[in-house]
Image 1 (cartoon, rainbow, N blue to C red):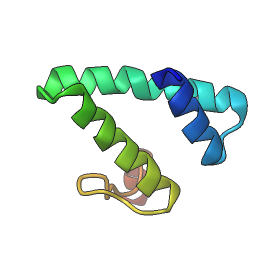
Image 2: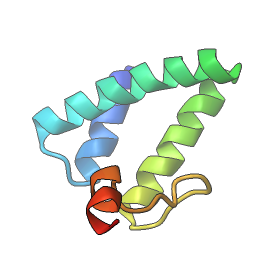
Image 3: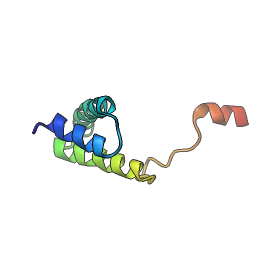
Image 4: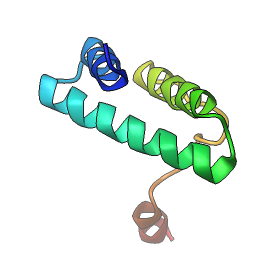
Amino acid sequence: MTERESLTALCGRLGASPSQAGTMADQLIKRCDQLALARGWPRERAMEHLLTVLIKGRNGETVPGFEGGPPPAADQAAG
């Protein structure tokens, strides 16, 4: 099984439709390569990070650095 096939299957098990799962897998692979290059991480570390964000996000949790806040438009409307 290829990396894309594995990621597509995982995204499907998390509730994505088949077409969404394929798109998500492609984006995970693309972002993994970007993170590995930008941060100097081994590719495996970058994918581990992304999968952690994905799983925690699916469960309604956040990882450090992703706490966020209201979108910028909401900040401007409130002020």
